[in-house]
Length: 461
Image: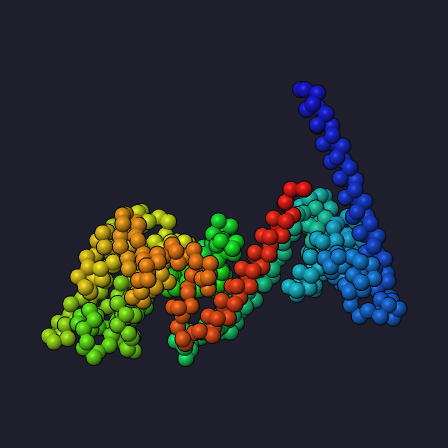
């Protein structure tokens, strides 16, 4: 072994010894401070002498402890008369204040105080030493002294699972009774979601959203360094989840159909003829452009018929949408996601757009299809954009004023994070969009100031 390696090992051993010694001293100092705090507060001196009603605030403001340490000491001092074994472990320095405070709070929160003080039928041996524990509190003290936080938390979970088996079922039933969810249409055509979910349902939804919408990565930041809004991504993920659920063969059915929207229109109206009729979406008239957009690809069942003869021209999705093999081909050619320049929507969130609309005779084949996210697909259907497929998975998207989608996204005057220009805003939602644009402008300004400060700090000399 070389001399350099020996010297490095010796230095590491010395540093390790120093850290252990300092940690021991720090714990001893914490224990001594806690003993003084318990003696002072048990006599009520923090109230009568110093004028504080709360122990934590008294510790922080009088002795400048940080909020975490002050909170731990306050919890232990308040609960020390109830849990003498745990308090003794903290005041002697055998267990950390963090572990003891966690244990005391957990016992109180879970309603375990009586259980923890009730003696075992016969003493239980500590899993860490030969110490015999006469009560659950003494066993918890052993976990606080020897175990890491995860083991301590797991021990409490086991206690609760054993003690509250029946109560946990009552909790679940009560949660289900209290759970509610309302989906209400607003006057502006959007929808409000309000409600309260059970613990299991909330976790399922949270986990599904996190899976469908992973946290934004730094490489997804825009030119101003701002990451996509998680709340907006969650809303789009919810749409994708519900749409996929409605078209799944395993989803519940009613009258033979899954949870889809129903679009009814005659072919003459859909192709733009002046028939005086409007398409019907779930019992309500919608615009022709909206129907053409929905008929491209969405979670709905289109019913297209000849108005004169009443003959059904299409029922279902097979003729209109790409089959599994074609969809797979399109995704392989367009792995980067939405074809719109600068869009970060993943390919799983895209819809197949017919460049020549199927109602106008366009074919459902790879040459006539391009994948776009729901937002940019709708943008194409405003009639202000022209799409030309330039190769597998690639398209030229040009505004009728001559600018391209790439120019549009690079425009420094774009108003919203997704490039939604004010010229395309609905009058009905203008106030809310204006508020969002102001918020976004403020975020851009803050990002620009942060970048300027960073450049100033790193400037040579």
